[in-house]
Image (cartoon, rainbow, N blue to C red):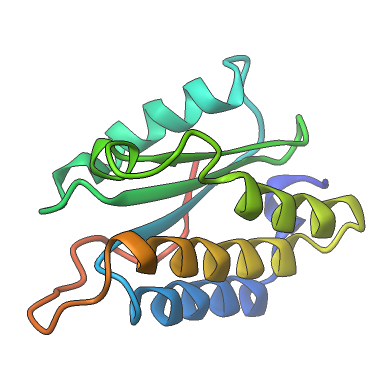
Amino acid sequence: MSKLGTFLTPEDEQEIVAAIGTAEQNTSGEIRVHIEHESATPPIERAVEIFEQLKMQHTKERNGVLLYVAVGSKQFAICGDEGIDKKVPTDFWDSTKDVMLAHFRKGDYKQGLVDGILQAGEQLKKHFPHQDDDTDELSNEISKG
């Protein structure tokens, strides 16, 4: 992975935000992406910190998901809220992780995030289907640190 400033183009970022919107059409789950250069904290621990900083735990069903990427240290993690954890098996995010990793290994970070987001949406749809009264509770914009 490269430096944060060149990790994704503005067009890449637009595609990622659009993928979040598409994924959220089928689920009441909320998906966010956070990208930073690196962290000395292990990726899942850092993802939990960012999750809390972004106040993702304040969704109605506690069904937010954060895809966290540390560009410089070439690490990523997927963090789901407690509403998800109560309903799904411990290996729930493995298929999403595998999809992302396959693209990341080829250097295709944008497609890894897009496909990871869409996969997460499909996974969430099974346990948190979209409801008529659903509202978009969290921003779809990529956050950066």
